[in-house]
Image 1 (cartoon, rainbow over the protein chains, first blue to last red):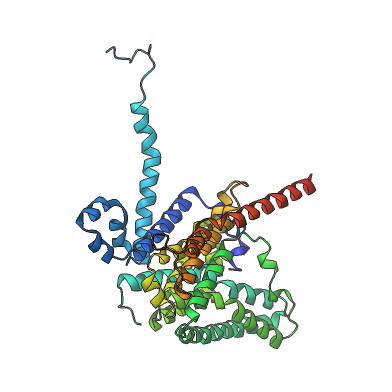
Image 2 (cartoon, rainbow over the protein chains, first blue to last red):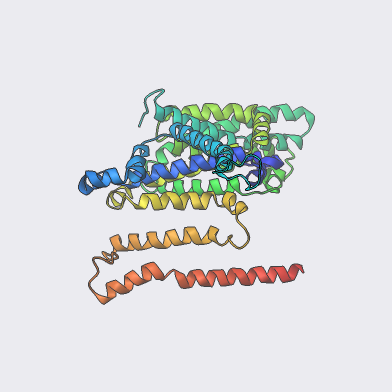
Length: 113
Length: 300
């Protein structure tokens, strides 16, 4: 710990970290918390709640349950994929919204309907 | 417990150990260099050799000790809490850290230099050995591997580590997150708490969020505005408040579930649980604001 504080950038890592690196670590932390959430849910509850609840809750606890026994490397991989997905969304989403935005009324490209 | 070679669990634990070694193991090289610097040229090479030997011997002895200590009930919990503090310390910006350690005192003789190196390693290597012990999950092979990886870092790797963390500061953040994750797994693996966790599975999530919110606080507080900074204290405090009611309910057989309450005392307890945190939180915010105003007026 003492050694890394010899580097001004490393000693102030919370401020000098690159946006990409920060997004990756934040995604890994999210995956770690999700894995602990899977650890906190008793799978027997789903048996009691029935199939209807399990299907309704597919995006929530049911899917997170799969992460309960994940190891660090799997969490890092999932964090990397999540970070890549968020980065792609950050680039792609404005382009998608730009297409949806209507052209100005009197522009030449405006198709009269 | 021995993990199967090259299984996901084994490789994950090995990766955690490498990362922990990277962020925590390099201190000895610095100490040895600083102590040797104060000695005459002729003695420097001897001090570096014996200092490195002593540092490795101390670390090996501590690693063996940690394997046995973590099997004693209660120590896994204590180790987990210590790792949370270590992760927090790792992420806290501290530009003066290098100037505050035992090796600053000039060593005048070979014996004094060696003593300084060994004592400093015994004090500063505790975090590294504890973290390796926690990440290894009791596997002797992994602890030996962790030691084998930390030795080259102690002897030759300091420059490499500095270059790596200087180029990629996110390694420090990842190291902090891995330390927090190891701390959480040590807390939930504590044999004394295992029966309690069986009956209160949901509290594992509360503990995970508590661990991450305390250990990663220097990171996310750097991104918060001045008005939101009290959240760094309020969020963990609220989780501890809720957790305390769960512990009290199971320890003193209290009814804290409002659906099952049927006496006025139980309703009162329920009210205290859900709304009782508001007055202390308001008092904390008021005090925080008073201190902030006082420091603003002192600066003006």
